[in-house]
Image (cartoon, rainbow, N blue to C red; front, top):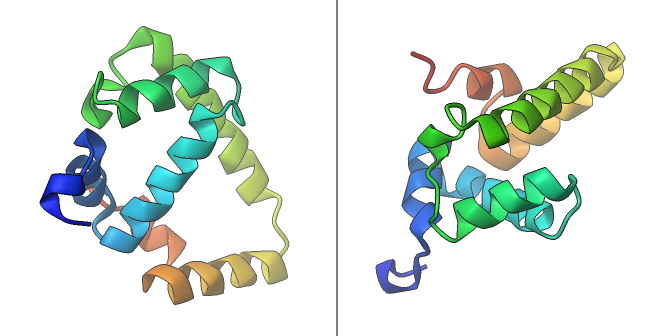
Length: 112
């Protein structure tokens, strides 16, 4: 994607994700969220992000979005904790093949 074709979120996602491939995956997930796959609050948040009305760094400080985001993170953590060792290894392999990193490496990226 040329710089002229970039949307407001593109550079922000790549900086956060650490790679163009990961940024594309996050942007695709945001597009699905915008279409309502994660509920109306997350659809609004995804729309605001993709259209540049809010920045990633502002999400946690925005009470409208912080609650639904934290709920989503908790659901993911619950799902992840229930994986069998085989499922966990399959997930790790998939992430490693797709992004060249382990899920735990990605989780630690950009922590203060």
